[in-house]
Amino acid sequence: MADEESATPDPVELTRRAVEIGNRRDLDATMAFYAPDAVFDISDGGLGIYEGASAIRGFFEDWLGSYDEFRIEAEEMIDLGNGVVVAVISQSARPVGSSGRVQFRYGAVWVWDAGLAVRTINYFDIDEARAAAERLARERG
Image (cartoon, rainbow, N blue to C red; front, side):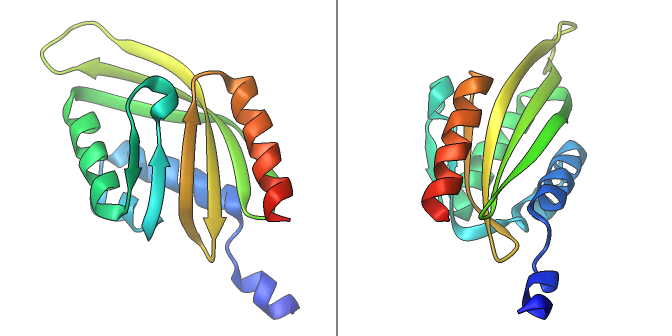
């Protein structure tokens, strides 16, 4: 059992690497973190739920294509157990053709299984993200 556990990547480390690669805007490398049937939920911000790697990639292409400059940073990451990580993310970006910047913070709940993200849920209320992540960790336990 110990060998099996040591072969499973640490969920916080996976989340950190996914954020770093997202900053490179390398969609192939980004999508390597997602399971083929993963779900990316940004419905809290009115932007919908994307099911499957192709739909998630399409969202990322559209989102990143809206910005000439783009940077996300994980201010905090907490492993809640059972493959669930909650992260506080700050995003700073410059929209295409603009000199202004867009900045906001949000909570991202990552659910990892066998080294792949199977679900990511984004909340603009960070406390709501923490509560949802705690519920998910208990449900998966």
